[in-house]
Length: 164
Length: 164
Figure 1 (tube, rainbow over the protein chains, first blue to last red):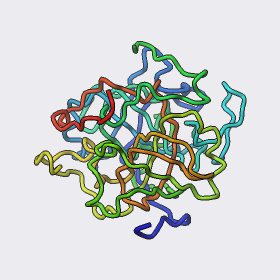
Figure 2 (cartoon, each protein chain N blue to C red):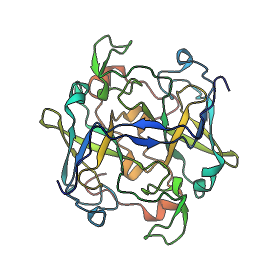
Figure 3 (tube, helix red, strand yellow):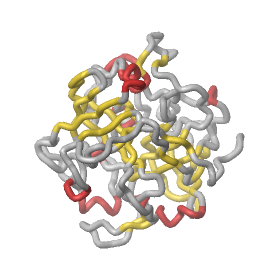
Figure 4 (tube, rainbow over the protein chains, first blue to last red):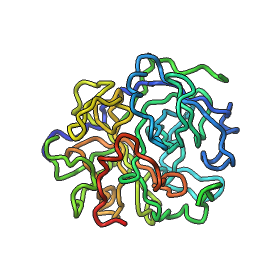
């Protein structure tokens, strides 16, 4: 180890940069994932004014990665039993919200700006008002693995409506 | 809006779940991305004992998404000028570390366990000792967009050695 390792007691301060607007008012309204509804509803990412200048040069990217904080999750757990599976699974082998750090990630289609600081996106599955913490450009050169194997989730894969 | 929107002054507490071990001792040693070196060196994700039970059921996933905190980044900035480009770019249109929340994301190949709690992975580009904050299974059904357009980064795309 070439420098001091992370201390398990450290806390890193994560701050919202904006808010996600979706048609899903409660957890019960949320789809299992953002591709499940066809057509996927348009959602918005509203960026706080202090961060809007960081959105320059997003034009031309067809897809983005959004990271957001699931602030309605109550108790984290290291195992969870998916309703569609019935077996307890290690939480890091799931995309469930009950992880030690409730950060979620969605690869979304980016349909341009509805207004300055307001992005039009598709494929979100979270509750309206969820805090956004980062936006990254999606790079197929490093982010796309179409042949990746899905382990225990393979029999439960969601078909992609409208996609090859 | 169906619930109280995120307050820009909120701080969400993010905690390390482990440490990434890479051959890169300093920022200057790090490749531009984790696919740039061919063959990509083997790296490790060492999970703290408290979280090891959350790793159950990872067997069978060929790729994972790792989220980590770039704790050596000093000053965030809303624009940055990539050395390979020479133009100032909005930070959310880059993968640069100097973002408001210095969270990084890598899609890595998962080569199994070197020991309980110690994952063998490839395609990391960060400094040895970087704190890990989440592990997610990579799902091609929602995470893979091989035809995504790369905007201003298109002329600078890194070829993928050993990949189609």
